[in-house]
Length: 284
Image 1 (cartoon, rainbow, N blue to C red):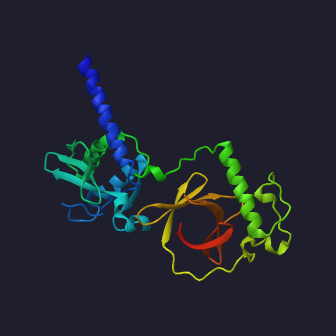
Image 2 (cartoon, rainbow, N blue to C red):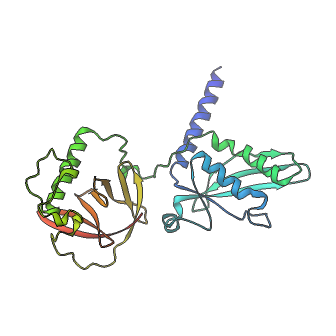
Image 3 (tube, one colour):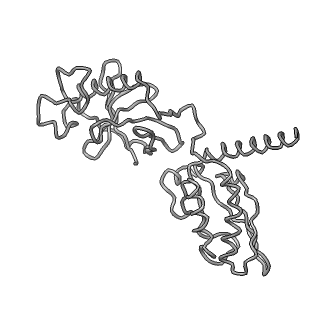
């Protein structure tokens, strides 16, 4: 009995470890042409594997159509390798997931089919092998948890701080006066109605000429986005307001207003009581 309990605990710990490893990867990359085949998507293997991973909740892409963040940082994804052999008696297949350094991260059990139809045989063998992945949970969590903020529920204190920052920044940006702290952003009306239709056209300060900024990629989080560079490192988190294309921006050093003007994005904040304006290159 003790040996059985120990064995079950060992399996649980091993599965949990694999789950934690897979959670670090944002994408699964499926080749359209697997080694050992003569044709692209032969026996519908590529479409089947992509479908199975999608059903499990993975973000799956083909190897010839990588998203921009994955193309810039290949280590965000795991590449699928199909290990297979077929004879007149059986088709055997398993899957191996490898990282950007060609290191094995996960290997499934072997699936086997006795069907003489290769399309059916590969479908049965791969589906059986995929049970190894179905047995674990997956939820993408970047490896650097120190910079991640989980915000499924915002506490009252945090809500109040965000509300105060939003109102103060909008007052400074829009030239609004006599706004009390109980008003929502939707209730704030500029004295000059001409700026109501384009809230960021108020001339607060001349926007300086800047070199082309580094592109930051927007990843959705609760209530907004986190802006990530190609490292990848989180550079700024922006939270939605009641106004389109206007966000509350927060990083380790300061809080401010992120908005779109003339098809460009800017981050406004105060540093030592002096207004600072930074141009951002955001890829949504």
